[in-house]
Length: 319
Ligand code: SF4
Ligand code: SF4
Image (cartoon, rainbow, N blue to C red):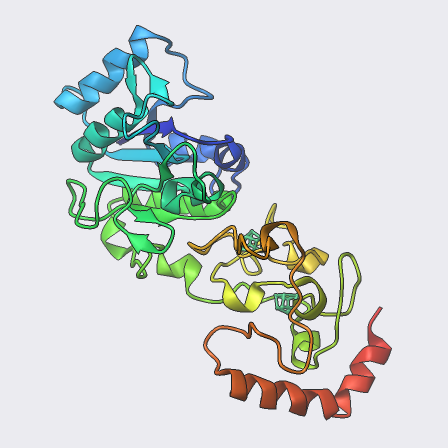
C-alpha cells in the first residue's frame, strides 16, 4: 500500500478533472487493484478544516508515512516572497509544500503550473508563481535544483495543460508497485516513456506535413504546421500514441498542438503579443522549423517534398 497526498496551489483544477477521467488504469483501479491509499485530495477528500491540518502535520512528523506527495498548480510566493496570496490551513501553501516535499518518499508535480509555472508564471507574474523544481526552462523553481525526495529522486514532472490522465495514473502505479527506479527522466524530469517522441509521432496528418500541404482548423487532409502554427514537430508528448479518451488527439481532430508539455508553454513573445496571435510557419524561409533539424536541412527537405509529384496525388485524395 502507498499513501498518497494531493494538494493544489495556483491551479484551475484541470489536472484533477483529467485525473478523475483516467482510463488505463482508472482512479478506482488505482485504489482497489494497486493499493494506493489517497490520504486526502482537495476535490474528493472528506476531511475539512483542522482535520486536514492535523493530517498534514502527521505526514510531516512521520506519524503517517507519506509515500507520494502530488502537487498540482504553481507554488505562489507573492506578495514579496511571503506566500500570503495562497493561504491554506493557517499557513502559506508554500510552507506546507516545503515540509511535505521533504517528508515524502516521492514527489510528483502534475501539469504545467506545478512543473514549470505554466500560465500564472508568464511575466509580469503578479503572484510570484513558480514550479516545484523548474521555473520555465531553468532548473531550481521553488524546491531548488538539488532537491531530492527521501527515495533519492528529484521531483517527477508530468507536464501538460492538463496532463494526460493515463500519464499520471501509470506513473503512480509504477511507484506503488515498487518500480519507481525504472522511471527514467529526461533533462526536464519528464518520464522518458511519455516525453521522448515528438507529438507528431502518430499524427494522421504526418503525410501532409512531409508534402507541405497546408491545413487549418477543422480542415481534414492537411497539416496544421504551416497556417496555424502546430507545434507537433517541436513538442515532446505521446498525445498521438496514448489517445485522449482513447479516441483522438488535438492534431488528429485538426486543432494545432500548442506545445503544452514544454517548459516554455505558453509560447509567447510579449513584444509581438504572439500569445494572443495564431502563429504561422508558412513561407519559403519560416523562422521556426521542426526541432532537431537545421534550418537549411529543413528548407531543402521541404522544397524537395513540395516539388515531388506525390504532393498532387495527396492533395487530390485529401478530404
Ligand atoms: S498537424 Fe501538427 S503534428 Fe500533425 S503532422 Fe502537422 S505539424 Fe505534425
Ligand atoms: S497535442 Fe500538444 S497541446 Fe495538445 S495536449 Fe498534446 S502536447 Fe499538449
